[in-house]
Length: 495
Image (cartoon, rainbow, N blue to C red; front, side, top):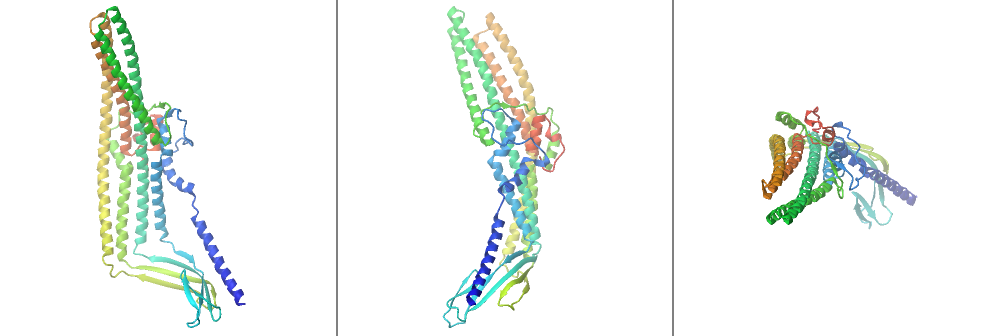
């Protein structure tokens, strides 16, 4: 009978252990795709927008790539953005952990205990908080308890409430920082995209100039052979041609390097296909005050700073709450007991009142207030920086628009001067050097115009970024439809 009883006891403990293991194993199962989808939803569909279907696979290396598709691709594949998304996810998990502090903890704690009186030669050991005796079974007392226990805080000086609010504000801060990281990434993609286009435009202009100069060299050599030109004219033409080749090599290197950088931002091996850009910023722009107002309400890093101030203020409340007493409850119910007759249930209330904490609570409170002041200072700095960024980007856009007007006039004038120089040279009225100088002036004006036209687009997109409106959904629509995001209705997402 004794052996049968011990066998049943072991079976009971084994069953309880297996049940706990199964419960723990089920709790550890995490759906990785669902976790990632939490932050992907924030950056893939901001403010409830429905952008076009994101590319599910990497495009072919030589496939055409529009600016809008480049933004979508970077948003999907860039690791830095996903890394920031994981930080936001961790903040949400911390918020859930803070909310769990309001819930009681329930545990099942089966235990078996063997004991014998002193002098019997039985040695005792302990394991897992339970006492075990080793030796013969004669005179050994056995005790089995399978209790279920519940513990919970009834009052913690409002510290748990403040901690939950702090965690919520922190998760909102990380959410805004995720959107801010997204805007930064997309702006970098746009800048690099236009760097490629600018360099390729320079290559086209230089190639066209080089073709004309090749024809001019052959014409000049023929004239020298006929005695209508001097050898100096040939040397001047060859020197100008060589200088254009050097500029062409430099522009070609810029194209290659910019494409490498673009591929790295997009998360793809190479970008060899043509870049298709049909985006035209609005002209004229709205008043700068409109952009500044939008930045104050929608700029992501500023919203993150506001959330950081709220989190720091709750952190002060968490530290102050340690001065207050805390009350906790412990409930235990005995599911099974051997021998019988033991206490069926028990309820214990415990209160803790700090009397002397060696200054640690005061130090925590002072530290919390210091962090709060830092958060306020950061908020003020970012707000001022926001206004400065908007004014700078706006002034750059306005200045670039005026430059484009003047450069177009300069190109037209230099083109006319070049045509006159060609005709005058054909009639013998000017020298070959005058003709080459006119051509260089025209070439430089064309290159400046091409570069400034792309600069204007970059300045405008930088202005959107400064106002908090360079996001996936809104900017992609503006690029595709030629709309001005700052004139659309405001959103709570700052997108």
